[in-house]
Structure formats: structure tokens, C-alpha cells
Image (cartoon, rainbow, N blue to C red):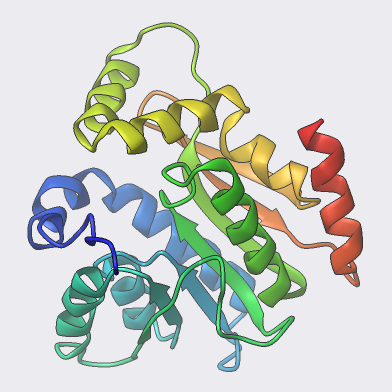
Length: 231
């Protein structure tokens, strides 16, 4: 029996509740992609856990043609609706689990993943990271947005904790574990990615991290680095 999609109801209201807080992150992501692409029309972009397609829409409007995936059908239906209203550019939504991406190795020049990793439990997150690295080309840019550990109980920290708690006990538990393990920067470096720069938002509680897959890095090397980090 297929489990109930946790986004079946929330997909309809996601944009109104969440999107106003993410506009600055969306803009910065587009700028970074443009810098990486150097106006190359063949620049291949993948967004994992695309949600309702807001980042994909902006990437397409900037002249690119990203492939975007999410395992939630209600989220993808929202994304597909936005795609129909594009005046130029395009994006290609597909239903896929982040732990089993339907692409060959070393295909994409850039992989974007925003606020999707922290909600996974540890083994699922590790599998998703393995897939992201597998489909990324050597030297590919990884643009990841997710939680950063922040000291003390700032207003931003309290607000973020409340939002995570409202998302449900499993979501909250996974997010707390993600932070205890060091957040998004620790996750990326643990998988052998080279962090180039981090931009912080919401009082330092969320980071947009620009990282890079090493040139000619073999998959075995990446896995070994993660195993060492996990000990």
C-alpha cells in the first residue's frame, strides 16, 4: 500500500506560506547559476526536491532549461501549472525520489537542492546525497540551501523551530538531527564536496552553500570520505 503523500494538502498553500521568505535566496541562486553558466546554452541544471517549482520557474525565466524532480505528485502538479505560463524558457518536471534519480552518471553541470535534505532521516539523506553526487559532472556546482547551526535562541531561530515543529514530529526530529550533525556545510564536506562560499539568511539559521564536486573524483572516493565523517 502506498503511503499518504505528506504534501497532498499543503501543496495548495505552500507558496503563500513559504515563498515570501525565500525570494532573496531564489534571486541569489539565479545569480550564481548565471555566473557558473557563462552564457552556455548547453549548461545542464538539475533541481532535486523542486517542490511547487518556484525556483525552477525563475531559472527558466533567466533563459535556462532545467530538469526538476520531486517525489510528491501534488507538488509537481503545482509546478506544471506554473510551467504553462512561461513566456520564454522552460523547465521539465518529473516525478522521482531523490534516492533513485533516473539519470546517468555525471550528467549535470549544476545541481540545486533547497530545504529538502534536513527533513530526511539519516540513511535517506545519505542516499540522496550519493545520487546528487553521482549525477553531477566532475567539477559541477552544487547549490544547496538548508539549515546552519546557530548559537542561542535568536528570534529567527525560535521562528524556524516553530515552523519545523508545525511540520510534524518526524520532520522536526529529522531537522534537529540534521543540525546536531553540523547542518548543510558539514553534510556537503562529509561527502567530499569542496565548499566555495556560504551566504547566510534569517540570522544565520539558513545557508545557501556553493560547493563543487572535485574534478575526476571517483564515486568510491566520495563514499569513503562520508564514511570517515560519520564515525
